[in-house]
Image (cartoon, chains in turn yellow, blue):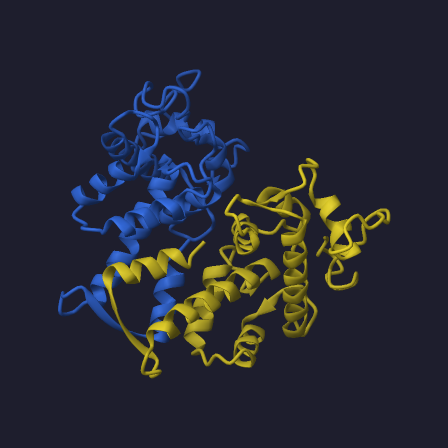
Length: 196
Length: 196
């Protein structure tokens, strides 16, 4: 699942597996089955965060962050086992592909990274109106190496965080005026619960 | 920095380094210098999150989480380089030792983990009055393996998170009545900014 030197050259950033596996489960697409077999290194029939991390590389040639992989596994790990089976994996596979498509759309210069103005445009098109200061804050927060750009795994984490916190905020914004009144424990529950 | 089978047997969980290094910097304690030399595997004169992670083991014999190490490095990494020098490391070393002491205090059965009732007591003594539901939520959130207990690295992360969010909440709780009114972008800034 290389996302390296040629970030978009291989069908959304996915390298083809070295051989075609025969379909083993009619309910799961052959692509997802092939990927599952590659990612499931210990052949346990389950994929954990470390196996996912070993398979995913961003545009800087770095593996996806621990956080990004744990976050994505947790979204599809219905029994909270820390692992996903092939059916859950197919959903994750489609989900990651969708994010790669979104990322490509906003990475206008095909650098494999999103810069500040590209991130502004992404959020605007998602329906958010953020101030320049807030966008700068997001880039700085994501990008600990101070590259002033956001890699695909950082972008996915940011978008999921903002989606989660926005949902939690909206539920409490009963008057829909963009402000909420919130108690201490509820505040902590949202802040800690939606983080990863 | 083993915290394994005998979690408290070696002076706060720290194994002594195999040899005594001569003091190289009078401003830094010999203990911190010895530890720095051990943790700085690539001899770069700086310690990053991965080097810290390789050196720290919790009571389950697992390395401290990626999150815990990144969070702790970020707290002492004044130039946001992702690394800390020997002076910053000494502060971190003292900080970790203080947390180990706190953890020991609440780990009444010396299991190397904190259970729900021990966590309740810890927060009560720190001045918080949390509901049982909230404590359960914290344990469940920390403990993805469903052990119903919190390891030392998870405990450190939880306490730092709660400290940060409490501080952000207090700054906004101008009437000190335990509720705040907060706008959308400020809410996102706190939620994302204080998370790790």
